[in-house]
Image (cartoon, rainbow, N blue to C red; front, side, top):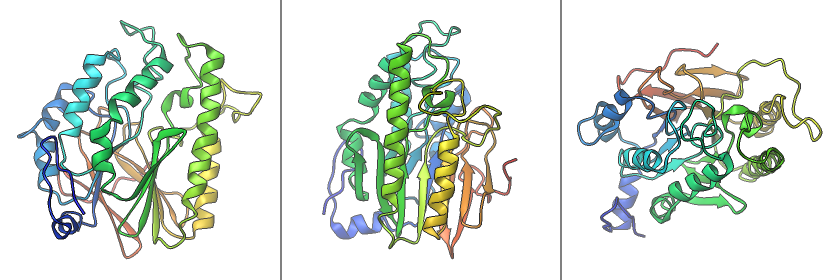
Length: 317
């Protein structure tokens, strides 16, 4: 077995690879970089977060989308620079799923230039999911991605099933469609929902694991009084009820610890939704420039700040 490390490739033995992956901890972040402070903290080699990641044993790092501030235009130059900044923070596999700031919100009236959101979606996917991305990702046990939506991935680690789903803010691309053809955008949202739910269901095929972790960008628990989206009500609706219901049913069927992780909103907090379903709002979004360290011990999720090395105690409201 071989392992690819960084841009300058080198190969180590399978024994060394096993040692490198021996940590039972993974790292997760989102909604960064938004500010110059984030950029300073993430910068190699002396940024606060860069140093914290380097000193924290971990086997991979997940970024749950929003790799730029929503107040900045979605230019190729900015997206490329932020990709370089983020992927340099770890020499372990870097797993990314998309947020709204880098595609659905790129057509905002306040941005100059504005972009067609569906064009930006394809650009960001091509930028992030390149050969170097997959060389590292494929080191994860059982790593695979959905053929029709390659941003959706799954893998196993420490006898836990991991998966990512493309659930973005701005009602998962169903609102504020300003430059793309509206019907095309809504058709894409319908397809995304269908493929997400299929990918989620496939996660239950692996019943031998001890837990499940699901990562995506949108805060689907933000309160709304809108009716749920349907085949005939495709916009101005609650695009996330289908996912809240699906995760609840997933946890009931799994009968094992399930951790759902998202960004999108400010608080770095957790919430026990049901006996075995836990929600983690990861750090980021202007409020907290930090990265979470996560592991499962004795059936309980242990969540710690890499910046302070303190356990997360804040609960989501």
